[in-house]
Image (cartoon, rainbow, N blue to C red; front, top):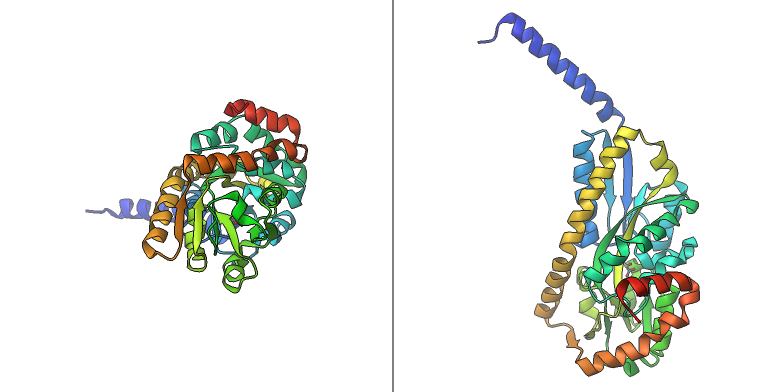
Length: 334
Ligand code: LMR
């Protein structure tokens, strides 16, 4: 039974808790997080996990608005928007930092550099990965984390088991010069296109093929417009989660601590689901039967490596010879 006094105490406690919640709700810090992939991808799910945790840990003082599927900006525009402060957070693919003047991230695009997620962790969690994130500071950007997607396959409308099968094929690529070099090494014709335009470009024959991890291929329905794919695993596609540095530095330190925690935990989450998301996407595409998937034999794989590995040496000056050397040493590549 409530006494009048306990009711009064309850009422004032309610008012106090409402008062402490109100300023946060009335005027939350808004983080616009823009990205170009579907919500049901490793990056899409990571962004939603970050939203959930950041809002929870700051008790609503931070509001995260996630804009997937290039809804707000396409590839190149989103980086400009971040620098201008029109959005606060992005997770662009590591292959898209060249136009920003931080082409060292294209290290991740060297074909047959990393064979699996363990190799990847040695780079992202080690000195090389941290050095790369630090390079963003001078561009007014703060690098917060690496989020995984997966290893790429090649797709086209003609059989492409061998590197020789790419002669003259128009291949959509991300903006990386290393990927451009890779397609040229295959005698293909590389064409940079924003991610949002790939499906239509494949459908209308503007390009013949592309490369992507299964998760991106499936969620953008590229398998519907690609008759053949080869599981080359020739390269990696993943992300750096970045924020506008001015915005980040101006945040209340306590709020920043909560956001850091939300970022750490959503990074662990995103990286824990990437492999299975890609396996699931692959299985779904196989089920539809629209694309014929080719697995490389050992001899075929050797042929691919022989054709593409020389790019490490040939293009090392773009990334920095020392950085390539350091990555080789971490990964035990001779
Ligand atoms: C692409 O453009 O192919 C990818 O970078 C898209 C993405 O963000 O995964």
